[in-house]
Length: 129
Image 1 (cartoon, rainbow, N blue to C red):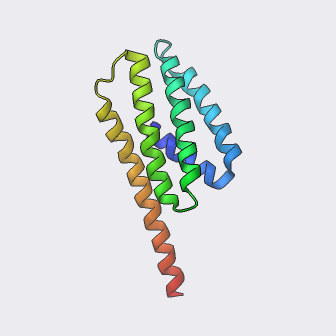
Image 2: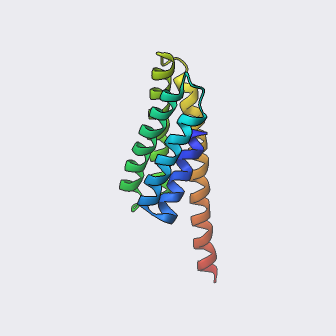
């Protein structure tokens, strides 16, 4: 779900602006804490907050050059950070981090490819008109 959350945060940033994106991060962090099993609630909160803020920072810096690249790179950064922080705090181990990162990056890559396709399709439609 974090891959989707990172992508949705980018969409909020793009459509509603930075302040709404930061508000969404705060709400998401609280929900992450409240919905998690009490044993792993802190790990969930910490991982969500840090990964979302990292994604936000990377996305903010890259988006003017390419929104698709910003989604991809910020999603990769957020996914790696989320996996490492969560696994380390919750379980004291980084075992199986690779599988988590691959799954999260997969969602991010699909989203970035879809955004690229939509942009290119719009260019062709505008050119044909």
